[in-house]
Length: 242
Image (cartoon, rainbow, N blue to C red):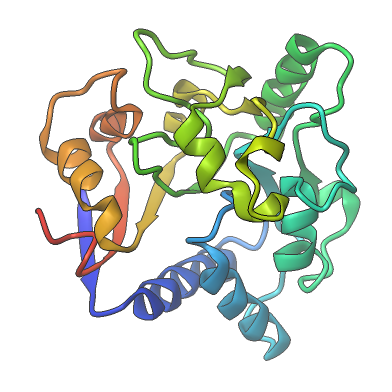
């Protein structure tokens, strides 16, 4: 693993945005995997600025997002699709055919997950997958458990994960859906390159365990140890226990 430690969360975001923009310049038809949540917001902000300054061309970019809540429509203000539209898709002027997203309102969740897997395969796989990490070590919505699903699947969210996402639902964790659709760890690990972003002291224990502890389904992020091309973008607080 390539571990990069920066002085601040701002520096982390700037460095990761530069990494993404460089990848797009080198490979204009890049297939890019994207996360949601608070951590990547500054990265997306810098990418918006860089795109506005014509530092990269997104017209051939293809995106796949890690996950989406089950039971809410894409227009719901708490949906990850609405978040991504505001943060990145609209500012980069991505066309609908460039954007791939799980449908939380799909009548058949299993069929929707299978469709998503087929779409990733049809795109030639993900070139660069950005991931965050939950305080309990989850990646995407792959929660700690006795077993993990390898492919895209429906998942029951941990209470801590629902609390972490309460900001999208007016600060009320009770309003956060109890289930979601998520890429599985096997799908994530098939990406040709992975970039993990983590900031803040709260993430330090799980970063330490994920990088130095055993590979275990009780800490899904630990499976990143099995990938040959992983980059970590950490601020000093998140890296404090390494």
